[in-house]
Image 1 (tube, rainbow, N blue to C red):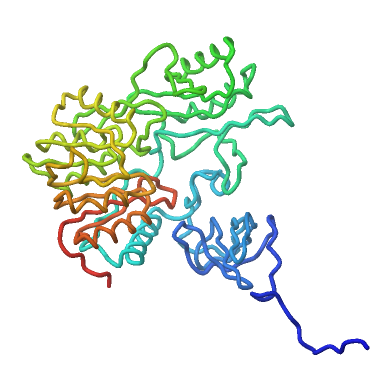
Image 2: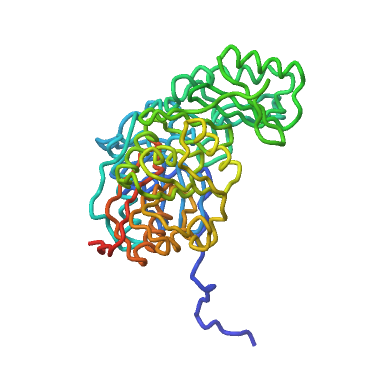
Length: 456
């Protein structure tokens, strides 16, 4: 006898699975609000759509770039109803090149977006707000970037070298003849570079190219195979025409062609010259870097008899100006080659009251010999991962004032929660507009020993 149907329908746990949204699909959307990364957010059929190039209140046609579960990432390709605050991007490659994501947003709105992002993270992760907000620290909207990496890829199918910047949300390369955010001395190099590289006998040997500008202009050519004598001479001739140093990098560290070359930047307010080599970390925005150093010293307010700790000191960007105002600076860095570079910079600038030390920054600070005397104040400028292991030991060093410079507000907020647990007050905070035309947030915070007040 055949079984009779019970009339019940059974589904897998979690309910009926929706069909995935295909990449490349076009969808008309109404944008409701702005995400912290500058993308517009829309909601459709139970999914959240994050749409680059779209603003709240706009109706757009968006093309799907990626989709997973209930989240769809897309790019606005057509705006049916633009809001009043939308502006025309200066760069004709905006929306395709992955470098600048919010050129359609006025600069004042970009700053407000970054400010909201920082405030929300501090409230959500640390449950605090600063006792006062500093005005955003900003510089020129365009023409600020003094360092850039140029993508290079050999297309074996058509036998052609692609040169440009990575596209948004893909590995494609966008060919560029100009880039408005680069400093002016790098513009002619960017324009002439593709033709020069395609004129090589073996252009497929080029991995990527980096451009630098400071007290000199430099071009670093990363090659994945040995360069022939003729191609090497062509690169030398190109750099000669551009009045730029040529640096080469194979499997080892970058080396200047034809002997050591001086490459560096100047901190004008302090009369300091800091040398570096391609591969070293250098802030890309010169004007904002100088203003950032000045603000950090003003907030920290070090006295002439104080002993100050500078963690993650790098080339000495903060340590050298600090040394001009205090009795002693102890500067710590995890990478030995950077310790040596910073020490050389101090000596070249006639500063003898600095002590540069390589240390494992994942170990407790108080156990280190250099920390036994304690410190009056501290400056902290960690990488994106933040400095959680460092801040856990700050209280044991007797530090009363701390300036934290951050390139990731999420880890700053996490570390702030730890500092609050140790009894530090968040006295002041503000954003640093190191990368205009992007949603990237850098920030500075001042902490003092004492109890922080909860966020309202």
